Each structure stands twice: as C-alpha cells, then as structure tokens.
Amino acid sequence: MIQRVLGHPTVQQFSRFITIGFLNTGLDWAIFFALTSWVPFFTQHILFANAVSFVFGFTNSYIFNRRWTFKSQDARVGRQLTVFLLINLAGLGISQTILGTVYVATSSRLMSKATAVALTLFWNYFAGRRFAFRKCISLSRHDEKWYSSHTQTWVFFLEHAALHH
Image 1 (cartoon, rainbow, N blue to C red):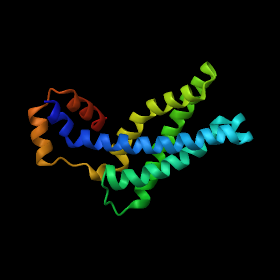
Image 2: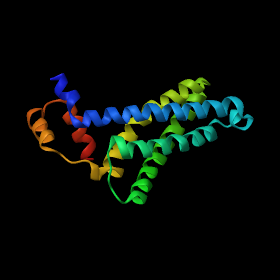
Image 3: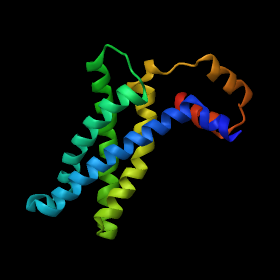
C-alpha cells in the first residue's frame, strides 16, 4: 500500500516540488541572511530583505518547477509566468505576515523565516498546480486505476480537496 501511494504521480510530483523548494529555500535563506547580516540597511529592514531574497527564490522556482516538477510544454510562457508570479506574490504576502508576526513575538530571524517558509509551502504547491501549471495535470490510465482502487486513502482526499475548491 505504501509503495502504491509513494509511486503515485501526484506524490512523485509533490516530491519534486519539495526538492525544488529546498533549492529555492537555500537560495532564499542565503540571500536573506547575507543581507540581514552584512548590509546595514537590511539589518534594520528585514521585510525588505525578505522581498529581495524572494525574487531570487521565485526565479529559480519558476524555471525548475516549469521544466522538472510539472514538465510544462505550455507555449504561453508569459501567461503562465504571470499566473505563477501572482500566486507567489500572494505567497509572499502570507510569508511577510507570518515572518513579521513571529519576529515581533520571538525576535528570532531563524524562527520567523522557518515558520513562514513551512506555512507558505502548501499554498504555493496547490495554487501553482491548480492555476499556473493546470494544463500539465491530466489523469493517465495509471492514475484512474489508482483512484478507483484507493478512493478511501488520505492522498485521494487531499488531492480531491485541492483540485475541487
């Protein structure tokens, strides 16, 4: 059962998204902590540093998620990039709110950034999958068999909820 769940295309796609997310997060964090540690302006303005580091993470995210995670062949790159940007700007808003709130409560840049990244992850994946890369999602025969034989599993319910909101 576990092998079937782990072998499901959606689980594999989410795993690729997480992998790219680690790369994006590493880049984002490296830039964020470099700016807030070594650039006097950003040591006093961490929300600006977060926005700058976001741009680098976003660019990396779009390129790798388009090519590897979602394997998009959509020729409408401008439209897709715009939708992906809007999703990620909403994600930035979520992240900024969480980062600022946690920082005021804890004065910890690490705790603030970690909490913001963890909570923004799910928004970015499900919104990106649903809106930016939706042409890349289709049910193959393997998927249809999997759904028909595993309709009571938690993965089905999670995906069903994400795709039908």
